[in-house]
Length: 256
Image 1 (cartoon, one colour):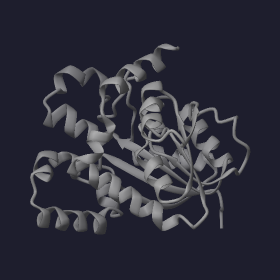
Image 2 (cartoon, helix red, strand yellow):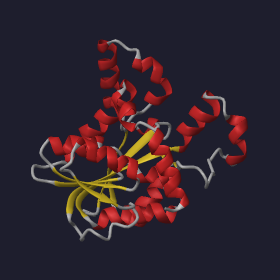
Image 3 (tube, helix red, strand yellow):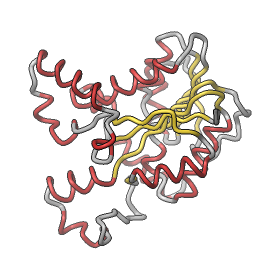
Image 4 (cartoon, helix red, strand yellow):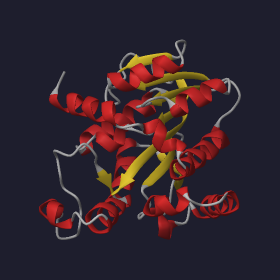
């Protein structure tokens, strides 16, 4: 096992992704992403979930009747997936090498985890190109945003002095040893252009939610429903995208 995979394995042995998505602030991200996935799915579509983690999206879509293949890189997540559904198809692989699949094997690709952990641009591009190669219709890609990380971790959580040597003069995070990579909109646009895919839609899967986790987790049902409605109606607004925690691109290789 290489050092980076070991560090990822150690992280996911401790981090509970399901618990995060079950709490109200995590539900916003999950429900928003599922709304857009459903908007582009058709009956009978085959789905590949690349970087499936513990399988929240894979298992939900499989329960809805879709043919789902989960691709995951680290063993703890594979074990959690297997424990929940012994019949789901799981492939242990990196997002940058999906050579076990043939071209255009799936209708929809979900790439919600890998871009978090691929520091090098060439690796992020490889992941996009592999997803493009094996997918007929749409590729959903999630990024963690740079400005969110600076606002939340450096300033709100008061870690500026610890990480200031990892910030350039424009407050771009530069930390090759970190487990997470943060993006900016212009960098995502460049990757899309290099991949040869066309951007169909871009949305913030959680918008300002992560900045106010405790507030959202304590909302009464009516207020949370109103917040969720507000978020769904504003999550494509360009002025809000860069400061969101997560941004999702819906891409297609159909240039028309």
